[in-house]
Length: 79
Image (tube, rainbow, N blue to C red; front, side):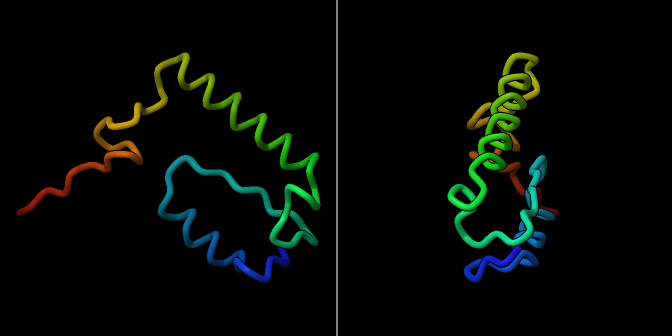
């Protein structure tokens, strides 16, 4: 919320380009949320791990190198 190194509007711009990303805005927090609000960061990390574990188990997590995954973006089609 008060990060002097990365304005929140820049984060919002990046989120529009990243699928399946969540963000939690922390009021009165600077650039070090892990030090300023460790309990919130730990809870968010646990939610992420739970989500990734579930998706890896149910087969909905893209594999690295798969077409369209972050490691291998979908090929551009020419006209």
